[in-house]
Length: 127
Image 1 (tube, helix red, strand yellow):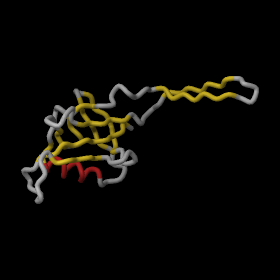
Image 2: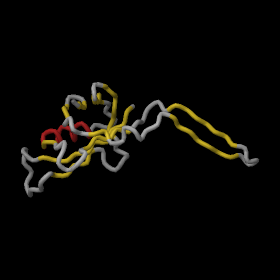
Image 3: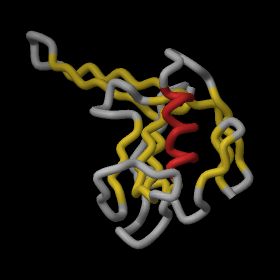
Image 4: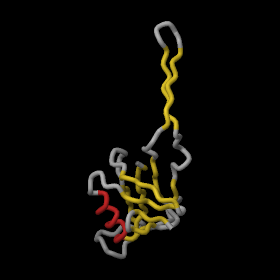
């Protein structure tokens, strides 16, 4: 089960960038004499968490769930608990990465209906 605050998300959402983050930050510079200066430190926060469907036929979200996510996203800097695979993390929305919530309808209709379904990608960041 996956929850974000009080919202239950589809359990088939995948954490697509889970293994692309590294807990060490490093800079490498050369001095004017050619000496190498390496500085390393542990990252204490900022891990990206991108949740989305693995393909077009999985992890659809209802209009009501999408609306609830959007209502959370409009509060600047709001810290929420994300629970995924039994582990809870404090997260905020990644508004600086294109769009914190990206949604496309499973089937397009001219009018919006509460019974509509969406493919949704949620971009969060662990703090």
